[in-house]
Image (cartoon, rainbow, N blue to C red; front, top):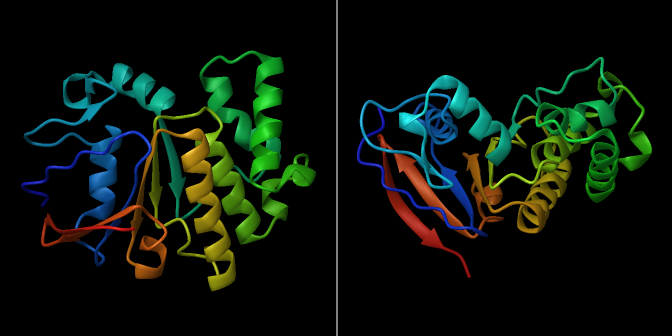
Length: 207
């Protein structure tokens, strides 16, 4: 159960939230994205209270303003790399020419442009995670939510992904939240909050 949480994230901030398994980190992300609704309190995103929106309105706001990076990737294995990354743009009704241009630019930014026509199922874990980051950022969301995005990667690939994620959030997104149990991963963020026993028990501002 999450109680007494009061969290404000401003544009340009990258926050890491640490905590052991079971303390509610993923639940918190779901609340911030409007996937779950709190029993009380408010969740404000771009001036809209997600707790007061119906499911359709919440979906549209989330589609426009939020990008997700999941530990389990959730890319579609039988689509090409480019098709996976273009999905958020297509859901927003972006025209074909702009969709191709923005997809190509994002693939180049995350270093997998040469793989654009390969199927996701043919790629390594690190390459697939780059697809997930590109897909999360291609529609230029105001908030990026990353849930243990390096949990399935070796240390070298994890370091590369964390550096890439921070860089791309700073360039393309308004703000980002990284959920992690790793202090090494958390150290890549601007601020660190610790979620413990249902509350944010500590907050560190990094230099």
